[in-house]
Image 1 (cartoon, rainbow, N blue to C red):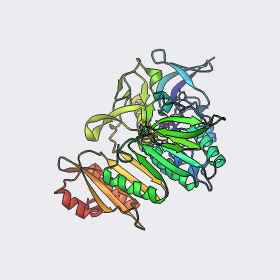
Image 2: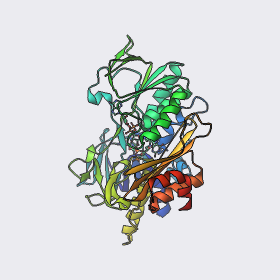
Image 3: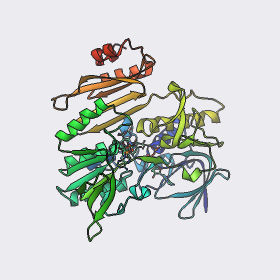
Image 4: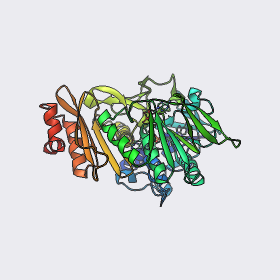
Length: 433
Ligand code: FDA
Ligand code: NAD
């Protein structure tokens, strides 16, 4: 039996939840909207999974972090969807999308028709088995994308009390998971190929602080090499990690965070793609009529920089979803909304640390403040300067006002007289803007 909806959101993650709230705000009739997700739970704030979900004491659990609590909004419990007449179709994997016929087919053989589709399938993790790493299918090698993954990791942390973990990857997952594993009193070694952690954002100066801080917390860091193989015991559980440089590390648990890949394969050949994502306009409309794409999968015009970008962070997932729904609703009334004008915003939290970044990390950089990892209260930041203007700003341990100030700098792009002057002024430069 086929089901038909006016609007279907494919994916039940961050974007889906914020889109549902926006539909409800704009006015929705019962039965008009369905969310189809292969997850078993209603949309939630995914960032919790690599942080409070794994805390040794009072870990966060659903329903505590359903959207939209992450941005200070109302928590949308499963009952909320029911009250609004929004159909939450959970544990349902879509395996075929026919955009010309406006239909989706699930693994269970159900068909769903829509008038308007919002693609919100997010990303999946890159796996070491994808690269043919030997033994990478051993038990207790974990990836982290959804609640089901986090539950498995949580159980392993409990089962391997005071054990050893190897964390493969020095990006967001690598840094956040190494910290939370240490909080669980696990002996942690991080391994990554680059000369410093989080190279896609951090400068050498920023990274030196985090590497020093993590080392002081007992995290061992091995740089410039990768995991090339795993051995397991007679139960099939991982025991050792072989590194390319010949070293061998003992491990009870391995956590892998070597990047993500946007889930666009269902739509291959049916919709225009760009930079690895589904190409959209400033209203998140794709090249196919009545089909929108939001969140991690969308490659959209980033107005501030005059180019197409894809952003894999939660702030954009929320805002792109709201923009798409506003645009859909406005077009039904023959109206338009303003173009999406996004200021990139990324953040992370680990141990007692918390950083925010706004803007673009291109051009020259200056480091300011106290970035000594031994300091009782380190506070430091960095500016990125391109064509004489400050285009990006990073701040560790900022107050809400200070974070607002660096966001403003990245948006306004004030001229920088000299790099030396900027380094000397530090945060006070931002506070004046
Ligand atoms: P999201 O991944 O949230 O949702 C996609 C949904 O689609 C999922 O429910 C998935 O199961 C479903 N789906 C996919 N294919 C399907 C199919 N074929 N059929 C049915 N359902 C399907 N960002 C940040 O700014 N700060 C942070 O601290 C963090 N922390 C963080 C931690 C962890 C562990 C992860 C994995 C990610 C983050 N992020 C983050 C990134 C942020 O969470 C991410 O950018 C958003 O969740 C993207 O939202 P989307 O809705 O696009 O995808
Ligand atoms: P990432 O792109 O942040 O980091 C990948 C890292 O993998 C690289 O920095 C590199 O060090 C490493 N790497 C690549 N190949 C390797 C190899 N063969 N061996 C060892 N290391 C290797 O990706 P991630 O950390 O896996 O995060 C996945 C997704 O989740 C991303 O979309 C990310 O934005 C999102 N996420 C975001 C946050 C946040 O914003 N705070 C937190 C967690 C996850």
